[in-house]
Image (cartoon, rainbow, N blue to C red; front, side):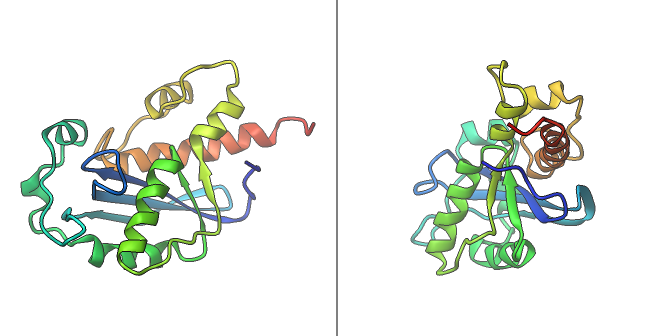
Length: 189
């Protein structure tokens, strides 16, 4: 993975889901922030709960275990828009930017499947991963989950807290900016 471009635009995003499988589970929340020129633009945000549905369009209940992780209940999403309504708006928000997530394979996997289901394209300029950046910045460390990375970089989870999309996005965006600064200071080998 190459270093990020300092003046490029990035959309840092996070999803909360009903489970771990993009094919079998559904998104229940999307949060995102924009970064330009190494600056986080808190006012340029995307936040939405999503009413989870099965591929056939029927309501997908949020499993108890998933609700224990992110705190999102069936009643919270009962009147939320569906992915068919949220995804086009999110794709417009992303536009031609590169996307960033903590464990991009998870979040990007859900976006690819959702886009395919709704006959849309998930084609960001690039997909960058703060887990991979953390591994490069801290090669002697074993753990690179978001909690550990936040502690390592002295970051705090904002509004919504941990395992809510916007709280996770705020920390991921700050980590992305700091990790890029750390890695750009490395001598080129």
